[in-house]
Image: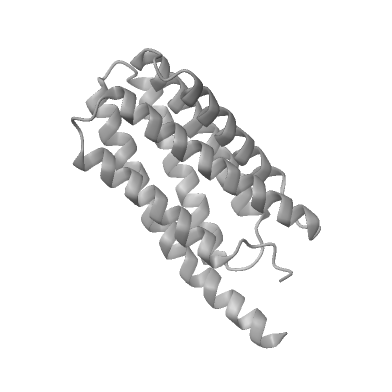
Length: 183
């Protein structure tokens, strides 16, 4: 497929992962900070690995891949840092997550412009990027708001981003079916 788009199921899978992560955070708010840190680290690491994999696939097709590669590298680095140092203070964790959210948002927006294919899918990816930037700004503006507020903000973001990614899989799947039929 020459569109440079990821497979539709990758949006669906990442959306489901984000949704499950958000639900766990909101339904299990009494979890220890340590468990939340581990969950976040795993989420950032796995999504980073997905992004790196798809950036390599884009590059092999000659498509634009830089923003997606940077998004993946940021996710892997942040996930690895968080998993390597899960005992850091909650304030340090807030700064790491805020930084990750801002960079992730910017890279998602750039990636949306680099994508080809469905305008709807590009807009939805850009919207997830804007939401990530808003989360980062909120966390930077209120870093000592308390871990429960942070869990709430991240949980809501993960649920909304997950739903948007799952919805994004629909126009991407439709586009890929049309391309497959044309080929």
